[in-house]
Amino acid sequence: MRFLTKREFISGTLGLLASSQLGRSQTVRSYELKVAGFYPESQNPAIAESIHNSAINSALRGDIKYDYYSGVPEHDFENVLRNVSEQNYDLIIGDIFDFEDIARSIALDYRSQSYLFGSYQPTPEYLTSFSIFENYTHDAAYIAGIIASGFSQSQVLGAFGTLYSANSYRNLNAFIQGAKEVNSQINILIELIEGNIDPVAIAEKLDFQKAFGVDLIFAERAGVEKHTSETDIHTISNVSKPPEDHSGRIVTTTLWHFQPTFNRALNKLRNNNFKTENMRSYSGMMYGGCSLTSLGNYVNRIPPDVLEKASRRIYEIRNENYEVATVELLPVSELGR
Image 1: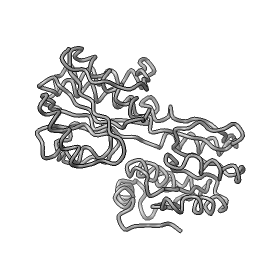
Image 2: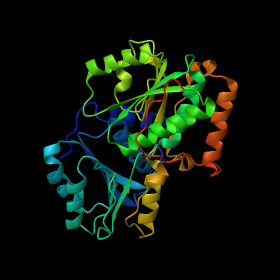
Image 3: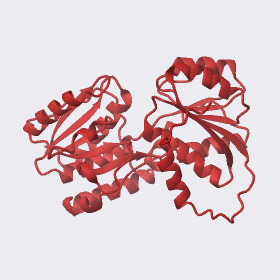
């Protein structure tokens, strides 16, 4: 019932096992909670990996017993989720971004089952054990904007996002905010993509941006960064697994961490207080829910005052002394100002 493929989750799982402080001779205490990971085939791999790795981390600590169902085909989503819901798990985790209504109808039939799903839609009051989260990473996107503005030599930035997505708009607007704080006159050229990524169309858009002088893009739309390696344009990618050697001209990557959200859910379960809640704030930088990867050697191409500003803002956000604006309006290109 797990729909496993050879490569699915293996790098993240092995990475966690390799870095874990649990030796073979150590005793793992008996589990407290039984958790199932439920991963549709259509799920963003980086999001699935973060959820999966957090659960493995908790299992290695002995906090939970963990099973997972990965690569669930779209046509089997309902049947498999119903089957998992009948297995007496304390909690089922995953995302339902493409299956909002189906998941809620299943939860209505299994009201005693607790769920924690990635979702954009609010939960009806009559579903009392159906909590949601988002990869709410606009804090990291804002810091990425600061870094991008300092990195750019042409003072023309590009950004690729998803059309009709409040989450994408929120990240793009946060990126613009960060860039503008460093240089209010910087130009930003935005492309919004609908549907699947067309490599030919992306190549044309990149050529268009390059003609305007863009030397760095924020690839908020996952997958765009794969098409920039053959250009002279550098990239900041978003919620994706970064290459360790910064290949493909990737300066840094925003990351989403599920662990703070998961820890809150587990604590509420232990206290018999798990109920419907929107936990998206736990994806914020204040709780350690998002971050950026190391700049590597690119750190030498960013002015010290910009690096200091980025570090100061991270500190302020984590200590509740600064709040990144949440703007979900359509972002617009700003050229020639």
